[in-house]
Length: 462
Image 1 (cartoon, rainbow, N blue to C red):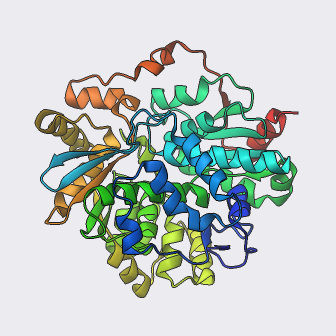
Image 2: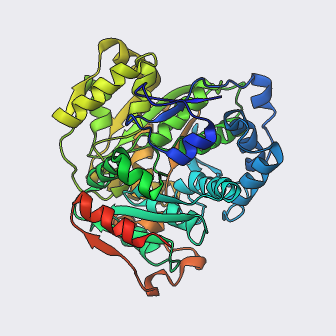
């Protein structure tokens, strides 16, 4: 198993190299050269297994010789030991044939924990073996940053710098990033939106002198290891509803496209997925692209679902790579056009390929609040705004096939929006009772690449 760039010209890497590298040197994203398939018998045998056992079966074909079988199982076990539910990703029935997949039982109460906790374990094991040290720089619209800081804080071989848009994350999200006391983790509040932060991270990766000087690594969903870990809960949830003998569908609230792209990989691996439905908020570039074939940025409108306030969805590049039959040159051309002109037109053939896999829907602010209210009043479920967007869009795609909507964050991460819509204040888990009493540590910076790079260079541990 080796890994190739979506833009076609970067060196092929092993799993370990791709994981530690993050963004390819040609600006592309790494993908496996081929997607392994699991037999129906293998998928069926997952029934009754623990989440950790399913994770091992799903991910092992991608790892190569990076870890032995025993080492990899130990890393998986350690990654999920701190989750607050024995099932790790439990299913809750919302209505006939509609189920909610709760992905918020990890340490930071969001689906990002499934990938980040494992990535943290794998980074530490790999770097301890090599004796190297790396600098992780990531951008976040809220949840990735807190999950990364939680996963890597206190680790010897890693310095972590997380860029987040100043004033555009919830207070809980911000405090999860700014209150850890470990000296190897740093929160940087950037003037701008998430796309501003993400562009700065990509610029740093493409500044090879800086990249090599600080030994830059990435844990945004540009990192293939992040996507791979998210593939697992598609299998665990589908099998619990009868797969592979019974097809399932998924609705995924998404901004950066990584979570739903993991569903695409699960489908390619042999999981019988009938529909993959993209759910967007008012920043609906993914919905517009699938509807019209035009991927055109229009600026970010702040919303009550801030983790989806994105216009440049990094993982959509991976979807385009498959839609263009793995033609890296075609993808590179469109990504250059996006950078220079703010958008591009998807070819008819590629658009038909995308529409064969993905459906989509858009939810307004008013609809989001109304669904939070309705879900609590009629179904007894308190939803975060992102999960509410998923449930709302799923309503238009329900049928005889079971629909699983991904609940991506705990409602307590967005207390103001949830309370305003439902009249119910969502409490934080007991382990976070003192979150609002902890001291914050954060660096504010303008949208200036050189200034950000200086903060990182000055903050790296000796």
